[in-house]
Image 1 (cartoon, rainbow, N blue to C red):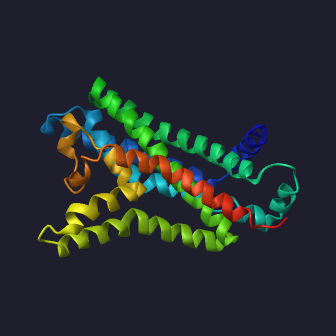
Image 2: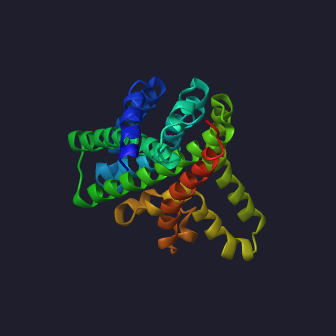
Amino acid sequence: MRTAFAFAANEFRISRRNRLLWASVLMMVLFSGALTLLSSGSAGNLGVDTLTAASASLATLSVYLVPLIALILSFDAIAGELERGTLALILTYPAPRFSLIFGKFLAHGATLAIALCLGYGVAAGVSLAVGSASIESAMYLLRLLGGALLLGASFLGLGYALSAWTRSTGAAAGYAIGAWLFVVVLYDVALLAGLVVDTSGGPFSKIYFPWLLIANPADAFRLVTLPSGQAAELSSGFISSAAAMSAGPLVSLLAWPVAMLVLAWMSIRRISP
């Protein structure tokens, strides 16, 4: 564990120099502030406070931007070390290879947490400055933050697995973009197409659809952070059919990082120093 923390400290210092990461963090902060300002105008008409309206918008923003930030952090975690020649040196140390992956995971998770706290903090600050907030909306924002961290952890693990499998930063970047596009965008389109075909309410709609929905970390995040009470008025009804499976989405979000880290560890074991 001490070795993992040493790797984490070094990786955290490297992450601070990642310009693409800081551009993504800035985008998160700017979008959070802008969405909060836009939500303040509609909050009164909907009968909800400003932070509730802003949080519903942040949930949609997070499902696209958080996985992207996580993949930016992780796609070259192993392949980059291999191309720079530093991985061969690291693997000669008498340390478990999983400690390298876990150390990077800790550092990148902390970096992602800082980015999310900045973005959501701006949303909360703007809500208090130009509108209103409540205990319920603050609790929902905290739930949204926790779900976003789990979503980011899932894609961090996916990025490590792709990086260790491809062993090339160029290939890892391409696969990372493809994975983001498929998991976040195309997967839901495919499910929606299945629902359109299964108009009679057959086995796909009643049996397979809910399970396919929670198997995707992005959709599991939507379910975990599904607003209740006032915020439910702002959410779409697309995922309501699986909302009754309350434990499934959370289990999915917890299982994804573990599964991806194990997959990355299995891939890095095949790399010779």
